[in-house]
Image 1: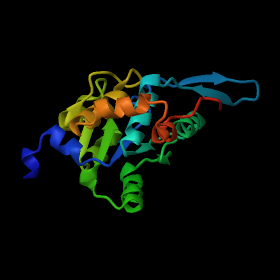
Image 2: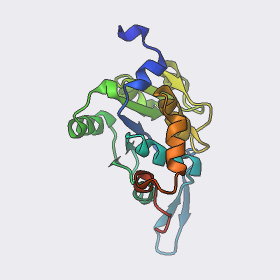
Image 3: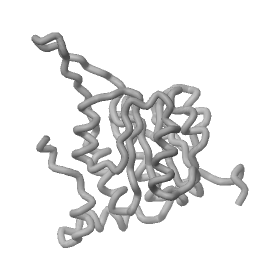
Length: 198
């Protein structure tokens, strides 16, 4: 099948690894900074619980998950730990460097990667991966090259939209949900996220 004739669903069926930007994708993009008495500050971000549960579904379905973000944030490290994220790259001004490391670790190709982005720093990766996903709140340049645009905005369920689209394209969304809901499914228990006790 020629690359130019592939639908977004065709591309999704090849994906083995799902990568996310963080700010504006898994959050709404707000960065709240609260100063403390020693001259430092506490950073606050809000994440969607829907995205978190979706990551459990993705893991149960056999996908690997990664975060690649330009900023360094303890908040992101904590959330990634709670969600049991496979790959976490912070401080990435050139995100393809992280992608190359993931490709080597997974032994997969660019066509087997999906990436969810919202701003121009995501363009180099989105131009190369097999499935480029833009959030509903993404910049026009991102939406212009996306194979799929999520119905919801970053921080409001866009991460879950991407997972639902991938699993639906594989024809396994309903089955994966039922596996997750089965209290006797040990694989579902292993795939589940943490309990938030940081």
